[in-house]
Image 1 (cartoon, rainbow, N blue to C red):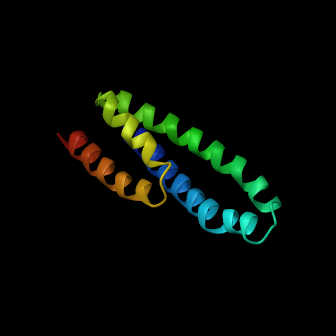
Image 2 (tube, rainbow, N blue to C red):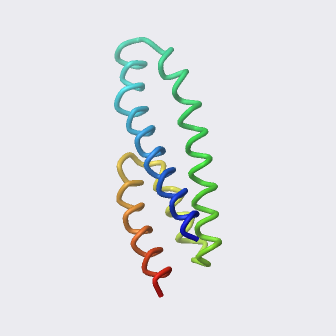
Length: 101
């Protein structure tokens, strides 16, 4: 279970950082700067990282036997800039508490 938690944490950070880069750097370059090429190259990377994030969330929640509704909310947290970092801290604390018990 510890390995699943580590995978989830890594993917939460990668997804969060890539979403921030996409929203705060690539989209302004595309729509304000008129240069679509950087976002065309970066968007598929973020999409792939988000898919891996969803898989790691699913894996962690199945191993921890947590509720499905909570899992969906955690998956959606990867779609909102900065929220994945907050949710990652909460999920990590709950997982460590459950593992210690």
